[in-house]
Image 1 (spheres, rainbow, N blue to C red):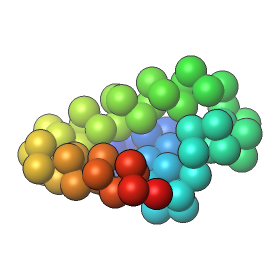
Image 2: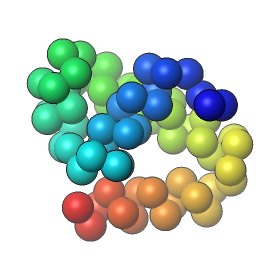
Image 3: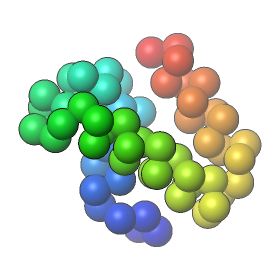
Image 4: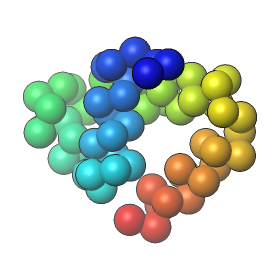
Length: 65
């Protein structure tokens, strides 16, 4: 709720649905560069809200997928 929908959608696709950035781009019909930008901004916003440890946990989970 605390970050904009456009960032939530990308984060959900990548982290919770397990999509690659390319898959998210194709599925959401958003250019790959925009997916990457929204991921970066979304993670930065999460870091502001929850702290860096939460962001690291998300990134580690993404790498393991």
